[in-house]
Length: 538
Image 1 (cartoon, rainbow, N blue to C red):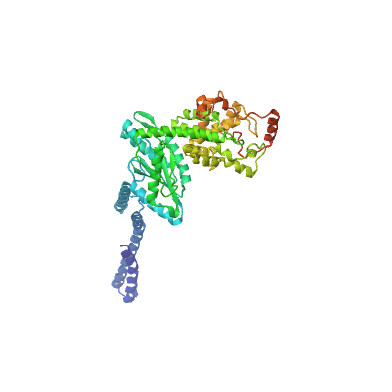
Image 2: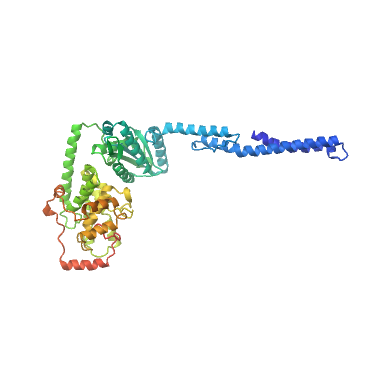
């Protein structure tokens, strides 16, 4: 039709011009009036046809062409394309049909690619995207990680509160994870209560940090279900990844799934990164009976306690070591964790991390730790590596790995200006945020080479001052609820768990008065490399 109208627009002037050439008498004044009238009528008719064709062509181009282009976009896969209908438009029915086609295609696509219950990608779409991402990462030699997220004790939720409550938990967990991923990442429901995450441009270390953030976010959620208005659940997360040519789709899925089962076998509510020391050593995946699991957990707890005592006995006698376990810090963090309604397993993780949070200082020289003046750049680099050193130590002591994320991040700041990774806010593991407050209080209320001890009231004011920048405001509020009126005291039970008697809880004896005065003078001239806060923990 478009071509016909354009043809009429061009043909009519050509016919008019040919007619004038063929019948020149039509323009002769001497010609009869009938001839001139006929010629004029033909000319006017042809001009009218030309103008009509031109106007119709312009209208069609303005109204029909957008409809054609919209249909082309829909055919190309843009299912969000719609047109604005107009009741007075003769193409209104066509516009409505195109919009209806777009909606039908979008609904069909969603039904085929989105899990209707949770609103995230279904398994088929997830695996197709995984194939594409593995191919891209292989072609461009980029990192890629896969994580499996499984809701702990989900069957118990269904059995206790009903399947409707289980559906609420599934949807909320899926959307919590989805809203805290990057736009380039993807979550899909792999099956049952199990989700898969595709983390593009992400190595396993970064994936583990993200997984811990997600684990804590889910743990902090409360679900209002019938019979329990504050139901909470935890998740176990397994991670596998690789780089470039090392990536294989089936291996990523298999290893991340095995790592997730390992996280569940180790007690649930934790993140486990797949590791393969050699070609024959793989993460085991085998059924375990209830009685066998109970015995294994009891042995595991005994092994962890023995490893904790053994590690403490190894490092404490070192003459220059300044990261000795502090029962006061451990007591504070246990009370804070109880106040924040954390599960018993998480409280134990935080307590252990609090006792060993400065274990990395075993690799920092006594001269640097005792230096009363400002540190040089090289000396400061030696100090700030102690969380990473602590990570390495505890990763070697596998029974103590639960405490690794907390130890690694206990010097992060809520504002994002801490170390070693500059995490901010909820990206920092909650246990690390709790240890940071307790460690800072302990540092402020004891003499340091660069500063004399503060009073309890002064230390509380410092915590309040730096709430929201250095410290998590919720943790600071919990600390004030517990200790605003009077200083914290060592819990004998926590001290016993730390493998220490009350007689061994005293810190290094205070320096002679003259030495303390010299320290105070030097401290007045010192600019702390750790930041402008008097609450910077040692």
